[in-house]
Image (cartoon, rainbow, N blue to C red; front, top):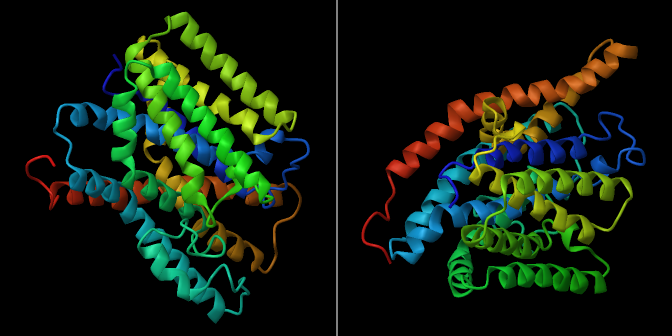
Length: 358
């Protein structure tokens, strides 16, 4: 049985967020993608989040579902309490920065900052084919996809319960679903793992399903502590090696799933990993703020840097570029403690759906 607190998976969240963040900042930081394959595949950090989401929600809610204590309204309210305060803050910050930038004479891509798309962002449907491209706070497309998965969680719970005696089959079906959807998207000239505004809701489905299936597998089967640690190491090696070799995303994706499963098994076995250390766990707790604030920080930081009377040169220029990472971290800490955590607590304490399970 898994412990209530899967600390290694919490710590893994900051790895996923940092992977995406460095990918988005790659040009700002002057990173050569041809030399750093892991950075080039940084967008897969989102898929790591998606698998993790399915796993964690199963861990938190499936027992209540099986015991008839699950309340769909309260579940969705809790998910909104988790996502919406920071989403609203960062969307608002991006709009303010856009308005100030236009007033100061800065240029913005018209389609990416289209005021007519703000309503879709407010109701979290901007990854449901309702917008032509990522807009405003670009990374937020993924929480629109998450919201889509949350709405479908009852279907995932039913499937998990139905396959509780055949957990390996559940994992196989999730893999088949991923490859099938990826194949369909490829026939239209795309890739499942590159879908964002136009199809992000589809992208999350197999990854979320895989997370649910892996939790079901781990709830009925266990790895030895030594094998769990070995599996974690092999998953990391596979991810690094496959990205360095430039393999197609479909071959990297199973490594992400394996990493999550093996890390959860180490927690189950009581074997602490570096990701279960207090600092890693804290960074994992603020990872959502890191992920959601890094674009507004990017806009503000580099706009100021570009307008300095005497821009830094040489080693100072490198320091100034990488300084954005420190600013992101500081802003994230502030947002987590001042907005995310208190707003989430207040919303959950004022759940309008409290009552008998439905």
